[in-house]
Image (tube, rainbow, N blue to C red; front, side, top):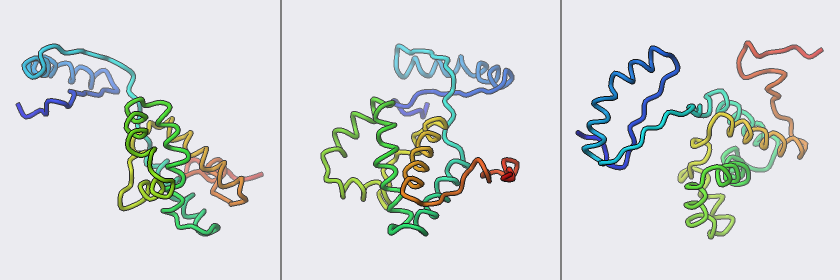
Length: 169
């Protein structure tokens, strides 16, 4: 078996048919897991949906809009937002993230943290988020920049999907 010793076996299903297909593979998966690890734990839980492509597009759009109106590049704004809005969400909700962030990143000077959040290093934050966490992150970005007088695309007026578009009365 080529499964790395520290990687879990994960199967996702959104329909009964997908679940039955996953169950059909379970005997082999359990055999391999027990041979590899000995004791195993089987967990069935609600799947946390990862951030969406539309959320990512909206974030990029807002950062470009901020760049056009502000005095930083979109990438610098992205680093700022990750540090000030994404990190607190992840530290609060993911104990493993909090432990590693506090041990490795937190002691660094502020400017180094900002650089770490940007390309080319691009410390992972939003890619770890669920769709719900990314929504809160986007809300924080919107509130921050609009409070400074910047105008950002309002996804409620002109959505990121064509079917979301609404005319203003």
